[in-house]
Length: 167
Image (cartoon, rainbow, N blue to C red; front, side, top):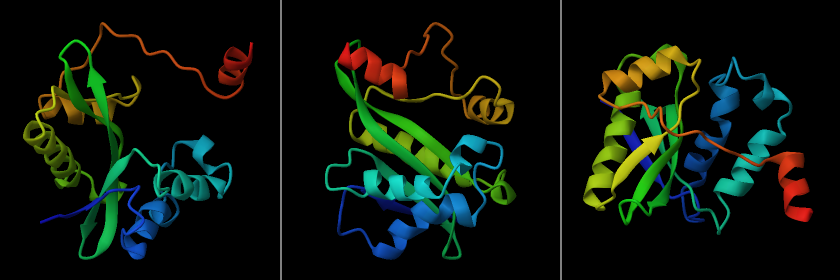
């Protein structure tokens, strides 16, 4: 039903039209309607293309197409668990066009990555979800995913990162 196109983002040989499908998704499909910080400028599309399609990129992606039209994507990378002594797959971002939700595209991308984790002997497949994103949380839990309540995420970014690194 869904055509999942696996793209190794750092691969400069990825078909140009598939690269542009991924980087144009935020504009063409009006992704992130509720996330105003991603609409500050068109610069974000350029930054995505420059970071994900660079020769040193460590992220990979799936593009989900319906009848040749990109309707969603998943960006992921490999992490490592010292608890398990194995690699894992971390789903950084999953998006399906709002008009296509509930029809199996998101589940197909998650299932693809779950199978990939098993076939590559990964110890886990994990991701984070904003606590207020009830529809996504309900979706993940309907698949059998378990919310992690015992972990607290920490982050340095922007000015805080620079200040810490340089002081």
